[in-house]
Image (cartoon, rainbow, N blue to C red; front, top):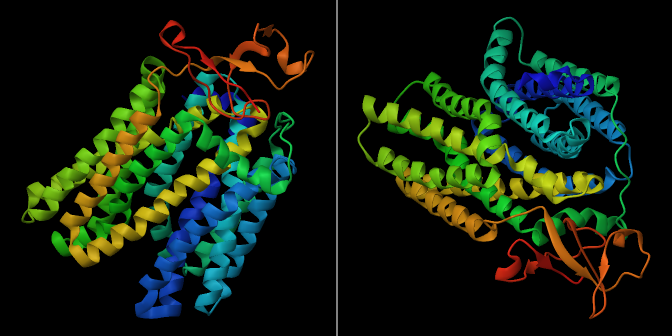
Length: 462
């Protein structure tokens, strides 16, 4: 897995991702303390609203950023977003009003919503070999998991010698270092985008790509399954630990750490597993494991608290982390298969936006249900959502899913560059097969042509 770090450009980009993640982790701790300083007993409400603002920024800004990535050099866009995040982090210690916190959080997360999909779309250009790209995806998942374990410990260490305001300074340094590393990376020139239409059409293209591509519709359903399982972990762990198990605050970190360990270990195993089994064979069983674990959590939350149920909860959280990692990590491979090189920024931006829309649904649901109906009901409801989403993914993702599909063009003139190697048909039009993606020449997905050509398909593009 670590062999991909020999590539200088990727090594610089990965290091940029790591230092930015550490900075973000420090900002998360510092923001909680800032909210408490400003709002006191209402700090939880402030943080809850800030989390909602974060998700809204992700959903709304990412598609716009995907369209911008086709007009602005990717390196310049990523550096600009890092500098924006650094400036926001530097300003946060000086705010003294709740609305100021909300405004700066929106700016911070809007910059992240532009940076992250652009970064994700750049990695396939840097590492074109599928094995290297798979290793890069696993490394990225490891970086997220290690950050979730390392950043709180680093914050606690720093807080023992400095005030929390200095954590924002650490965040600023992290984003500035990320910008410097991106500048130092020599990136390949991306393929020029061929899509026509104005800016709104380009911003909406990624969503249309997901709507038209079966495996990407399945990926969105899988994202919902992960969001349903992850929401109870991130929203309700504190209530489970403190109110049901009556354990100290430190046990909350232990429970969340179990989730991170499960995710981390799975990320280490995924490159070999994906090489042997393939994406669909890994992702779908992992998705179905999530509602099963949530069903077990229903029983744990309903049972009397004890050492056995506490250990069962830790195991359940580790399994949720493992299942989520097995679903999320290969997602980049599906997107790469389903979009042209020039359209990767729009595709990753759409996935970033749509997946966070799933979290925007499940986060408040996990909180409201827990407060009104109790944790067993919450786990049961989220299990139903996860099961429905996993079942939908099976229905949406064809078992036979070749990259190359035979199809018919009736709207392109003879001699068109796209028809190179195509054969004329008796009924008119041109037939050929190639790696099929939705683009300016292919507007809808082919339908299976029948038993004789089960791996073939026909489509008329208009």
